[in-house]
Length: 331
Ligand code: ASP
Image (cartoon, rainbow, N blue to C red):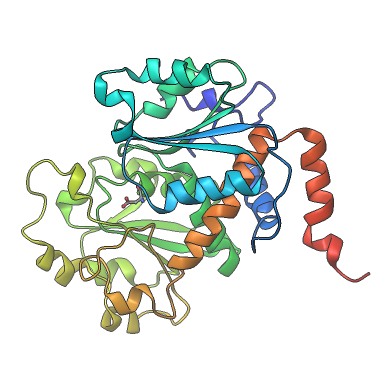
């Protein structure tokens, strides 16, 4: 898929479809910008007068609600469309749906779809000036998840070049794994591991610059960050595992396994979690877990992306002037 579609000729973000092809500078800019928006606060006028449509063809809790909150905190008008309630169930094609909604003067679409490439398709056909944000397309990409993951890691461990990151679980079906791998590589992570049974490792994944482990304890040894993935049964065609019980025994993150690792290892998960499958409940909300921080950071990172793409230069400038932490520091 053509990742240059998301950048304008001068290198600015027009759409956000994938992390692949973004520069380290641009990712860092988005993460820096997100620091302006952490901690809630009053509404900002950055997207006043703009209309954002959340168009979700797949279920979502965190991503949809945090995109909605992000847009509302920037003063945009927001419309949520769930597929079951829309005309696509009556046979309207993706393109017709896009064009119909565009006629309502929409400025940005946030799209989640089960087909890899759906967001690119929208970006190719969107009218000039209409932005597309990929909120997850099939197994392909989930760029804002990767950015909020990087934001969360950076809060705790700012030097990516010192990090060993283990991505554990259903790598085969995970768009989060792919986007995280791209982001970690771009930010210069020391070592990226994927840890899973052979059946859940896509062929040729080593070409993405990762090391493959088929045994959990070996894969976690020396890790600074553990990113767990949900078993994505909805994308599995046929049997990939003998049973979820066996998966938990061999690849589940338990307190006993965690106790053997460095005391400051970070435990992450994009959610929704399968308690007792890839993660023990006590670990999900235990002291090493930053899972709820990931959710919170999702709002700030999504505000940053929306603001950079749709906000006027003047308002962006004003926003930075007012909200940059250094401007509040005593002189
Ligand atoms: N919420 C993430 C996604 O949409 C991860 C998951 O569903 O397991 O890809």
